[in-house]
Amino acid sequence: MRDSSEDPSRSAARSAVAVSVAALITAVALFGALAPKAAALEGPLVNNINVALR
Image (cartoon, rainbow, N blue to C red; front, side):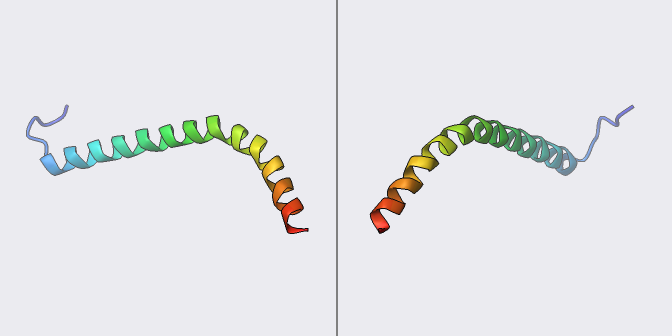
């Protein structure tokens, strides 16, 4: 069983890790949702740049 007098710094570190993992999962989910839209825009954008440089 856990000791009820757990070191507060260990608890804070555990909380920080949990928040970091949650932020990473959120970032991956957002990237996954936005990446197809960015890829769809990339084609016309690159084509427009190529036309402008000619």
